[in-house]
Image (tube, rainbow, N blue to C red; front, side, top):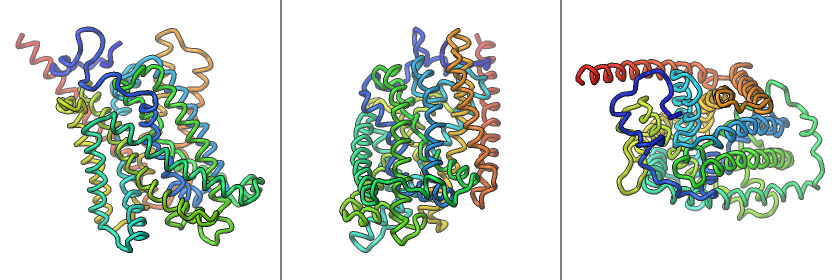
Length: 479
């Protein structure tokens, strides 16, 4: 079955992209990324260094001593989705990430929703990361030079730099992301282990007993905890460029889910424990890992981690632009967006038009909010929470797409069906956690903004579909 499922006629220019056989030529380099470089895409999109310095404090503000529990529950939920993605990834590969799986199993309108939800997820994540990049860049500059740079200039520097790397070479981008994330994560693990050692390697009973936490707080914290994981599936966007994609991509996705989950639970537990005796409020500290590094008498690691956090955010921005551009490429092949987004660079073999458009859309929200005077932390929290809606949508639709595809192939097992059902239920629970208890503004506005966004994309889908039918009809009349 090709990628163009559904009953809507394809525009005549779309049919030209089909290869002579059953495979589509996307204009990307084929089989150039090693398993490690494929894994790097998902690792960079998660940006594991970002969570201990920005996301976990936000979760703590909601869940308190239940922060580690929110991350443990998030790990279970994301692992269920990873198992489903792996089952789909072992059967097909394309540059469209989870959207390509949706087009094979879901009706055209639902597949279009999946595509736009995933694009929103990556774009909003990229914009939120820009806010974090601005925040940590100025923290470092102030530490070393006692000066800062205008936030709007930092936004332009981050977006232009990431777009340039995504424009030029996906292999270079993957290598850079792997090394940048690995070195920073290693420094954080050293500090966390020393914090546990300093506190006697014994159970922290206030956390074990969830002292002072509430079910409502853990539920709200779970939503932000899920944001720490979003992008773990982005290796699927490299289906055309990865070597042995049917084997390496499912493995990369599962490794990311389990590895990141273990790291986040450890970080949440150790940070909450470390700040209990620090005399500072965990959720109000600009550089929490710097504080903990001073606590274990290794201040130099605090500076390295702060620098690593900034670099990690840049790598995450690069990963978001890389993944979103390839989704737009496949959407263009499927007639959902203008065909000019199918173009790939003649020398670099990258979707350069889609990269430039994605970078522009990522930069605009962050630039507007920065200009209005909001902090990088505010931008990170707001746009990151907004991105979660897109990922919850696509993860939930994946739970529907897998059973449909396997049933059609006669390969649906009760185990995979059970995983799909549990995964779907977990996504519904995560969505419910964003709606009740009602959070304070502007977080309470986000579900309505997302609903408006989906309505706009559906209108665009039906208009594009009508144009496609009209183009095919005109071609038939002419012939």
